[in-house]
Length: 52
Image (cartoon, rainbow, N blue to C red; front, side, top):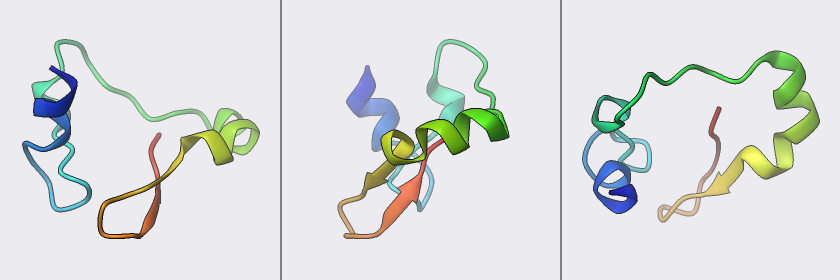
């Protein structure tokens, strides 16, 4: 399930939220500030992106 969601859609790291079984919502600003390092992932194209 995880890999099919990860590689199935958009240009940025191939993530397609419409394939998830539940609604997705962005993280709050305070949570992003607190967990920025944990939410930042280096993608296969070597760019680091914030996933929230």
